[in-house]
Image (cartoon, rainbow, N blue to C red; front, side):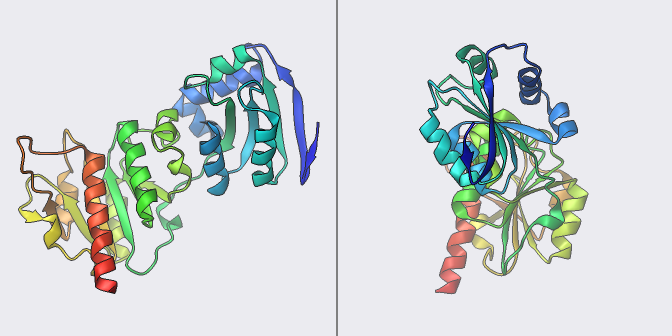
Length: 279
């Protein structure tokens, strides 16, 4: 054992895949129901663990494979955390069982999840929120979270969520931005009520719309940009409650683009309008 700031426990190396803790971590990676019940998630990779620490997540256990992730790198990570934590060495065999990716990271953490309520979102003057209704593909959700982080918008709301936010594929696809971006979840009705209560203009992306996205006043006040699934689009509840339904004009052969790309186009147009309005 060694000490950094406060007591940190290093257990002996776990070398059996039948170890109860290893079985529990494997189940947490695989089952959304267990993650919800335990209020825990599994994070793989140094960058992702760092971002979880920066995002104020409590890390319960840190597991490392010393041949891949050495103790010097571990010390640097622990210096960031500065709280009591259980640290465990893993044999290569055990690490390979737990590892979701190819065995190049050498670091896995078990962290407490956050609740993600609408009221916990911190709004500023003329906030921008991205709302995604019923997104299912972890790759799309991850890409939207990366865009939200890059644009530094006030948050992302998932309406009628179909996929657990702490799915390992979302953590990986978002490159850890699931831990840095303010995220809220709720039903479509709850989200619409929240946006109206907070005086948001609601701009819904829809193929049926005739108004182009660059013709709407994104800079005017609080703005919610709402996107649906690529297959179904947005439900009528959104289209009826929007301030304006908008479209990204397509000039090629196909009539739509990937939802995460569409979200990025709309978010950065809103950001550009705000910068122009300021100047």
